[in-house]
Amino acid sequence: MTSESGRFVLDLSERSKYTGEVDGLLKKDVVEHITNELVSAVWHSCRRGDDLKHRSALFRVTALLISSPGVNRKLLHVIAWSQVSHFSLLRYVVPSFVI
Image 1 (cartoon, rainbow, N blue to C red):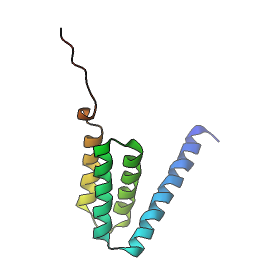
Image 2 (image 1 turned 135 degrees about the horizontal axis):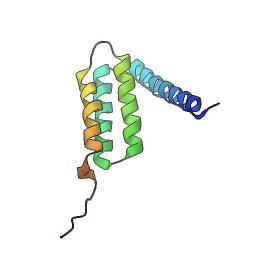
Image 3 (image 1 turned 90 degrees about the horizontal axis):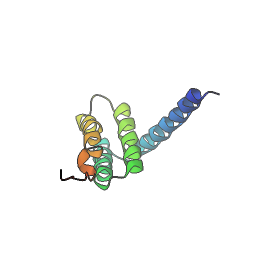
Image 4 (image 1 turned 90 degrees about the vertical axis):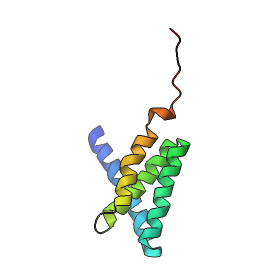
């Protein structure tokens, strides 16, 4: 098994995990409520600078977007803009040098 095929299997497994989580949530609750909770989780992980939680929250939001009929602009917005917030230079301390 090459490293590329191993990575593919890992990605497929991860995708199935989050799709299953979202499908379970959809059976228990209303889409709007789930959307609000997942969007809050993404922004919370950005504010804390937690890469692992951000990645997990983003995968869940993406799985919900794929599972939802039509276009959910709130989900699209958080997917696009959380990246800007999460990887912004404002997160990092940049030393200032006196020349």
